[in-house]
Image (tube, rainbow, N blue to C red; front, side, top):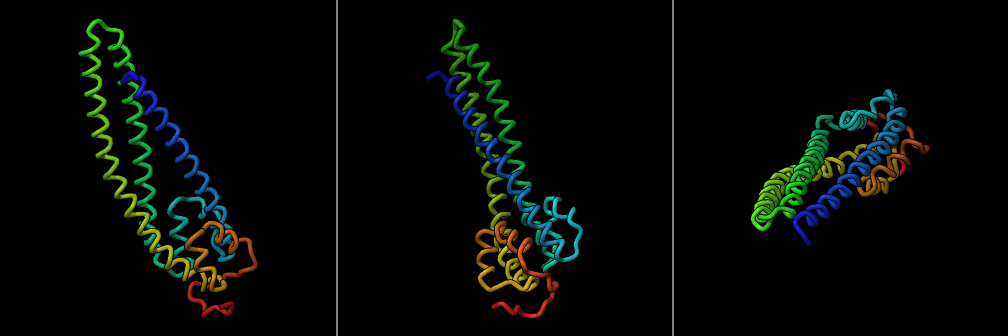
Length: 201
């Protein structure tokens, strides 16, 4: 397989991965926003706030009695994911240029030298991209771990604020969006950020 063919395969794989990631991010954001809107309405908060990324979490944290600024962990995660997407798209653009260059080299009389040069450029771009991606991925993990830990406290606070059964804490931690829907569209009423201990334990 020629270098240009290898690059085409890598580009196609990256393109499908990035497209799937973007679609999943958009779908999960919309679904969570709809669930948050229902929960916010029960607490007397304007529903439009549920559709602003990160701010919706800030409002929900405050609604259940947590410090809203803990949503910074989600912000770190989202920013890191956006940087990963942008970096990958930029890298794919560079791969396009390298494919064109490599295809010209393959048709050239001195193709062996030019193909070798193209291969070195590809290796350099891949090394640079991998290094940048590693740094941002670490940042993404820090944000996601922080968001997960805060999510545990959020689940505990949400249980009290909406007078939920004890088992809901596990559900709000493991599959939060499903349980946000159950809280938002179910029978549970908002009791306040500093509600008394729940009755449904």
